[in-house]
Amino acid sequence: MELSLIVLIATPLVAGLLSLGTRTRRSMEWLQGTHAAVLLAAMVVVVMQVAAGSIVTVGILLRADALSAFLDLMLAFVGGTCLLYALGYMGEEVTRGHVLHRRYKQFFCLFNLYLFAMLLAANVDNIALMWIAIEGSTLSAALLIGFEKTKAALEAGWKYIILSFVGIALALFGTVLVYYASEHVLGVSMEALSWEELYRVAAGLNPTALKLAFVFVLIGYGTKAGVAPMHTWLPDAHGEAPTPVSAMLSGLMLNLALYAVLRFKSLVDRTVGEDFTGPILLVLGLLSVAIAAIFLLVQRDYKRLFAYSSIEHVGITLVGFGIGGPMGVFGGLFHMLNHALAKSTAFYAAGMVVLRCGHKAIERVTGLVRQMPLAGGSMVLAALALAGMPPFGLFVSEVLIATETYGQRQGVAFAFLGLLAVAFATLLYQVFRMALGEPTAEVIPVTDWTRRFTTSALVINLAAMGYAGTHMPEVLRDLFLLMTGLFGVAAEIP
Image (tube, rainbow, N blue to C red):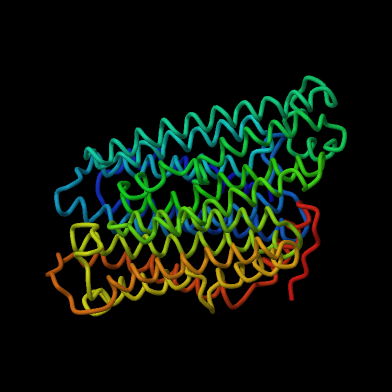
């Protein structure tokens, strides 16, 4: 149903504009709650239709294939729980007098426009319009990162803008090179920018132009994905943004940037083969894991701690796609989904600690499990998932990626497993420091209304995170099989 795709993309835009007209917090809560419900319903319809073998299209510009539907699943689910969480988190800031109602409305307007831009980028069948949509998400994200207007927040916002604009400019140059190659085959037309048409004629495109384009695209969109060494904006932005925004950045924005890289990879592989893109992704993936593993140990801010964990998991995903093969590709895709769930859960828990403690210093937080059982327990469970422990889905994806790597490059596999072991130890060491022991400070009370929204978002995420590690519904099995086919492999899901 084409209408479902239109509703999925347009609902955040409408909700964002309506947010500016709300007069009370209660009306905002009804608006955003309805928005989350409609978003999830439209996503389910789109995903089920695509998993059944159809491609949902609207005109010549909107097109949802398996990879788009996969991103829609993450954007709608995590975006929906983020909306619930933001109602509680930002509502508490209003109650405490830290945020005026006018700013409260502006926050949800920007938040929804951010989600709209990401959904548009995931479903537009045009490489140039995808670039524009991702650029739009960059502008919304920059304003949200600096929302609190502290010196550190404004610096983080400006750093994000500068580095993202440099990256997005390089991505534009790569996009132009793809168009240069395609217009020689398809002519000067809109078809030369269509993903569907580009895939169809990929074998006839100029291989030199495609190789050069991929390098620029990887650096450009890789900057937004937090791929090392272009990752330096990420810890500052995630650490200083309001916590709901941090969850969106780690759970969704990084995956959107990876989506753009994977779109170009699947195109370039059809033209020149995996031997070109694979080693590049593999090296950058290992570098990202190595840098994150080292910096996890020296963090003193628990939001920055989870930011470096995001860099690690982006690297793991790149290793999966870099090594290729059925298990590598499937593992990379499955890792993206489970990381979105686990990392948003970790930030939800961290945000509850920020509200109750009033700071982000690791050394000043102890005894979370005793003092704040839900927040502390959720942070421990999320950390265990992020460390790759069973029965969570990240354990499955890491085992699949490591197995495929060992089958193809044993030396790389040992290096990969060694880096994962370091990251495992450093992340759990930091989290257990906060979770265990005796509480050493009094906590700030929050309103029951705030607790209801934040708890609801956290419980929903925890349930999804646990379910994804032990079950795969038939509709997701079909979706994953279709996605792996886009990368020229045929995965078998038991």
